[in-house]
Image 1 (cartoon, rainbow, N blue to C red):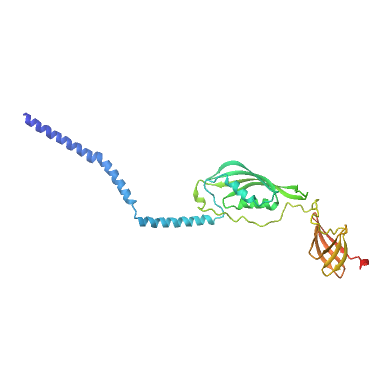
Image 2 (image 1 turned 90 degrees about the vertical axis):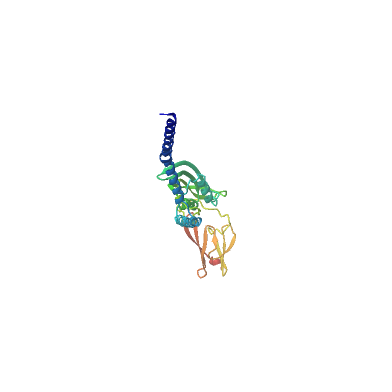
Length: 292
């Protein structure tokens, strides 16, 4: 074999090798990369939307969100997302802001616990106040929009005196409150609106029916105990108290510890209803016949 033939065969072998390498690269190595890019292109084409179509879908989702938000708002209670432990302090401070100066509420944070899929903060509340104020506090906690539960509550009697030594019949309390929240925002609406927490006064179940303490006559009203009926006139009745002070009173007028209920011109007497520490007493004063 001459030199020229060997060179020709070498070039042919090199050419075959290059062609084989190209075939391996194109159809084996590069094919996987092309398939991946083709799949990516197909995915991009599938998610390619017209701007007008996107706007329509946005409006539809916005409407649905408003409907769901309205449904959550109409519920009596909501469970907020990632609630701050400080918010309950602000909630209670807003309730007690209009309480009397004799009321007192203390709050102690106990910690955080989990209840199934939800979490809650635990608070310990103590203090005292008038019965209807404590009722307002309990009512507001139980009826608040954001879910709160009073787990335990203990109530008791408490008697204090004010600056004029007038007895104040208060109620002492101790309660544990759980304030719920969630790590998910789907249990509460976007815009928070508190429930109506206004409630009217109710009967004070802790107020004693019979009391040893009788309030002093600070308004200097007529004290009918030991009083004397002096005269009856169309405008009312002249009555003198035990100290000799004279008063002109008429039906329905307030006197010390009670009211003048009736003036009887035919029988020449007047009638009073008095409340002496829970004991109701009827007092009649008759006109002295010798003074007519």
